[in-house]
Image (tube, rainbow, N blue to C red; front, side):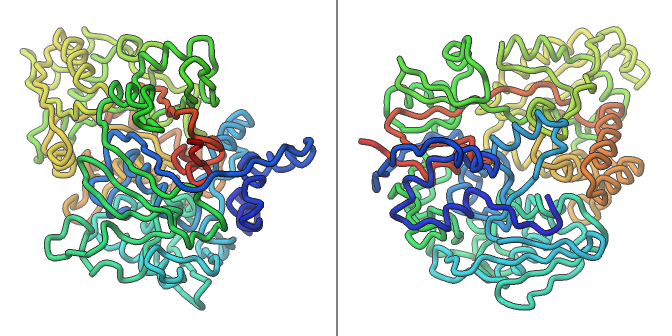
Length: 575
């Protein structure tokens, strides 16, 4: 990303066309390089979009509460991608794949403008000046301006709101300036290579100033009882109904900043927690789009086909896009007091690491879709992954010896907290239980759903807990969970894991300060290797996922966006 961002993106392009020409405009690919290629091609026959209709989409979960600055994660992003926007957006799936093929991601432009038109990076990387789009309306009719950005940044920075992006966004944020309605300035204490990504919509969705009282969290604070279903955003759809365990209903935002979009009138996000029933529903036409799909079915229909491309399943009457999923990971509680965890001893953590036969787990549970890994970024999907970093060998004698050295010659009792509603965690836990038993680990599996599971994670009342890694930048999970945090409730230890490692802190601070991609990646490699050496957590598999839609859904081009669901802004139903 240049220091003066002025690149034309797909969204910028769409904003330049009149509503009547929208059908022709959306027929091109969503990356700058594709526009030049499209210009050389023969003009395509104009397609007239159909307006109206309700799209029904299956989701495994809904965001825990409708507050997008509180929660992140994969399921939250599906919800957010319809409703909220940030100053930036991560570059599209197509452009990211292209960049990975060129110099391992060094050619990647990490983000593109969204609510910002452009920006300058000044004073050696310690000052970011964002110029904002004009005339953008929130769902409540308020015009978007610099005050909304300032309020959102400060709200996320306040530990009282427990924002998932607090460290990522505001770790080095010193002061904020709003010289006019359409300019906002962030002054940082040091250069920060992750700041533009931290301002993307998955991490920092912009909300209208004062839409919540200080200290309140939408849907969690009993004394705050708003009339609306969720906070207003600037995205193409607005939330009108929210039942966390059942469905969310979205309606088109008819003052959306891109003329003519969206085409759909409504989207219903319907909770179907298991991939099997969700697959059956989209195949039967009961829903139009499935965000999680049964892996055995995916393996069958994708036999002989390439992954990570849109495929048309003629016999099924379906479209499918296989995508790289977040790497799955087993967290080990290293806190010296919370959770009464034996994993506060490095030798016990290493012993568990040697009990995982990752290749066998991947092939047994996911077949062709499972890729054994030992790091938090899959090198086939992310520029932050490393082809030359593997994982620890499966070695039961070594694990037994490590337990003995740690004072457990007769074995040790361990609890394994899982949420069986996603990631085949129930089966995974049983496989790990059997693999680790010969070394002396007596694992009690503790299945918990939703709030119970997340509370155990936040309070560190666990021994082992199944989770995920990945993201767009090392400042997400790696900095967020491996670096110490002085605020409550962490009090000088790292969130969730409870570690205190000065060497890790130093390395992560160096990663944060470096803005050159190649240098930053080499520093991050040291972080990955140190986390493996200390066995702070145990990444074990990256699973290919899939998005599936019916033939009724037209003009759906998921590769043109960072998340497939965001592409529904340009799609319509042919019924």
